[in-house]
Image (cartoon, rainbow over all chains, first blue to last red; front, top):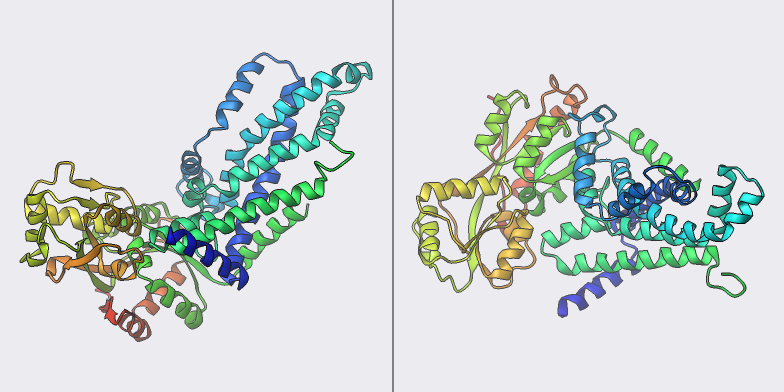
Length: 234
Length: 265
């Protein structure tokens, strides 16, 4: 019990004194995961809309597969990305292993199915409502997808935030492809794993509380910008 | 858009950064805290950013073979010799040593504190089947432990022998939670924050000698390896300045490492 208290105190002091290392790894955590969320959303949101409105042969199987991929084990994704980016792997010439770019790639792979699945569920409901209208206006596929994405934007923000949540707390993949290098690829989760390894539970826990606080702050910020749940809007 | 720009800028930033090289080191070296002393000094003296990848010796060697790092600093003689013999490294340069110690519950049910040698200590643990945590991760410390068991000639089967497959710190945490015996390097032990009921019980056998060596990755196999920088780093690591920093690094008044670099053979 004392260790949890010490963790709170350690976390408090790290924040109050704006510890330089802490600021750096926190910004890197944000940079990696926000980049991954943006890239994954650009891929996943139109994909989710496409799956909702387009009928094709293996659609059901594709959706089932996408749902199954939500549970993609990060550590396996990490290992595969590692092997692909390693100097002895097919993409070794780019020298991306152990860089923030490698971490972003791994996180995009992990969170894209999650965002696409949630987006698909949300857009399917809107599509049921908009179907007749959009068909009667003889819109193109592209216009329909754009309309559904825009009108479903609040639900889609939730999809992206779910992706952010999975990415920011993820440690298995980014530990493998990032290498937890001080001043280069260390982020909050890998720093926590490191401090736990050193037996410094107070600092590890302090970083953990900062990570939780960060996740909450980002969610509040997005909701504030999107003005969801405020009067007169849905 | 701003986010994408940020990413692009940070990528360009990392490209434009001053000289940097990737060095794979063992968890025991990093957990000792010595890297926190040496890296800033290297930066100040030769303006080189050494990016540490903290892994087990087994993985460090694999990273070197694949060319994912520029050099390695590890402690497992047989594996290092095989690495150099395989042409993956140009040469092996000894830098410093520390020693392994036996850690265990302060009550010491296997009485290893009275053991005559490392082999005897292990035999005592096996005899009373006291819980023993093994790294089990193919690291230098793990290899050392296995060779000690083989040398002691006692069987290590059974419930009491628990390989955890984790780094030094994590394995010490496990041992601390289970009140178990464990083989650790002295530096990691002294720097470890969660000692709980554990104590250093046995040390001093020459068999527990732990030599660290520096091996640059062979640029003939991987032309992206920064061989000029690995040479600079080697020169620094074997310099009187490094000797001074390594020998004077202490925790609670105990010296952790002894510098013993010599001219390359």
